[in-house]
Structures are given as structure tokens and as C-alpha cells.
Amino acid sequence: MVSNSLTRAVFRNRGSAPRTVYNNIQSILTFFRRNGIDKLLVTADMPRYVEKKVAAYNESELKALFAAADDEERLAYQFFLYSGAREREVSHSTWRDIDFQSKTFTITAKPDLGFTPKDFEERSVPLPDALVETLQERRRLNPDSVLFLRTSLAVSKDTFSTNETSCSPLWAELRPLHQQNSPLL
Image 1 (cartoon, rainbow, N blue to C red):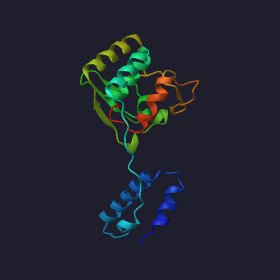
Image 2: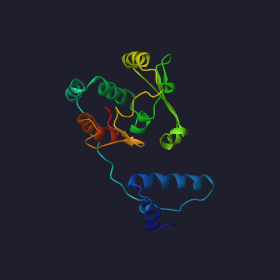
Image 3: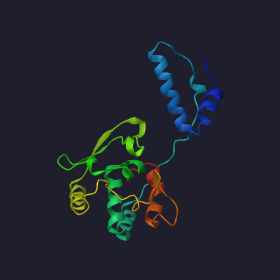
Image 4: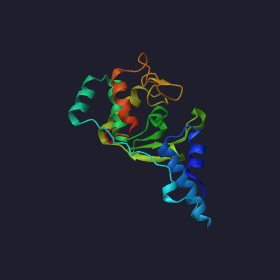
């Protein structure tokens, strides 16, 4: 059997959060089980984590947020809201990822930008008609390959910035909820 302290030491030294440690250990145990090696850890030895409560904006808060946003921010927030995409997925999105015919957004790896989707899983997400129409108009006006200008989303190297000088106040409010995978964002 592998001790709980060993599993914590291996994964925590890499800076992983408790939930990530748990998920990684589950993956390793599944691999071993599929290969006939069982009972490496008993349930009591599994690392523990706190299941975080997800905070979400209510409808009136979202209306206020969208009312205060400029056009660029509004589109970015709508894209997050309707696609459920993560920060890096949006910051690395291009027009190639939008299929206007099937009305989908496909999250794909972009090795040239140093981007791979979470868990290395590419996926497609349906988009509502109104968002697709807005994106079509945006593409007509801005045919560049990047869907959202990195500067408009306050992107530093490969993630959104929380620096007050480069990040809009609206994004500063929205970002914590998006990081928590809020159902509204």
C-alpha cells in the first residue's frame, strides 16, 4: 500500500491543489486496476479536499454588468456566459474555432501559441443564435484570425491579468466567478 503522506508529498510538491491531487491519484489507481493491480490505497488513505461552493451572479446582477460594459467587454462576457469556456480557451480562440453553419465553438489545441485544452480534450460547444449573429458581424468588421484581441481581454503572456492597470473593473469582478466555474459564467 502507498501511504497518504507519500501521495501528498509527490503531488503537493508540484504545487497541485488538493482536488487535483485526488483526481491524479484516481487516474493512477484506475490505470493500475485495469492492469490487475488492486488495493494500492484504501479509502481512508485517499487525500481529502473541500468541495467549493459555486457562486453565481443572479439575473439582475448580470443585467447591471452588461449595461455597464462597453461593446468589447459585453461580447467577451456573453461569450464566456454562453460558451462556458475557460479563460485560456477564450484567450486562445480564433475564427477557425467558430463554425457559423453548425453554430458551435470548438476548443482546439494550438501548439504554436503554447495552448492545450484542459485534460487534452478538444470539444465543441453549441452557441445561441444571437451570439452567432454578433460574432458574424464582428468577423465582418474584424477579419483577423484572433477572436478577441488579447489587449481587450487584458491578457498577459497566457492568461488573463488581474493587474488593475490592464484589467477592466468589470472583468475584475467577473473573473473570480469564472475561475470558480460558475454556472452563469
